[in-house]
Image (tube, rainbow, N blue to C red; front, side):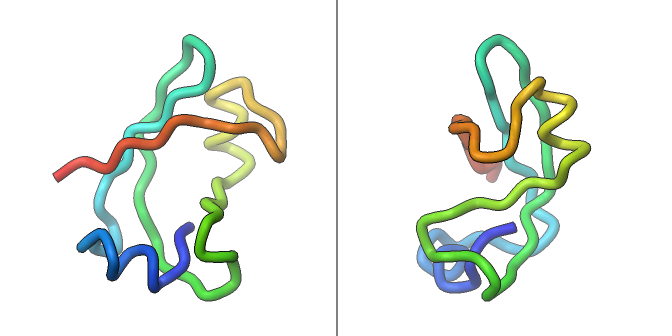
Length: 66
């Protein structure tokens, strides 16, 4: 989930895909807006983190798909 302002700044739409990489694992996730996160944070579900082999607080690389 992304802060709504961050989504507006980058022209992102709810439901748009993002490609996430952590170490050598990759996953596609859907972007959803929320005001519950800080503008510089991205929240991911536990199941998405598990697919990447990442723990809470891990740094991941995110690329938004057009």
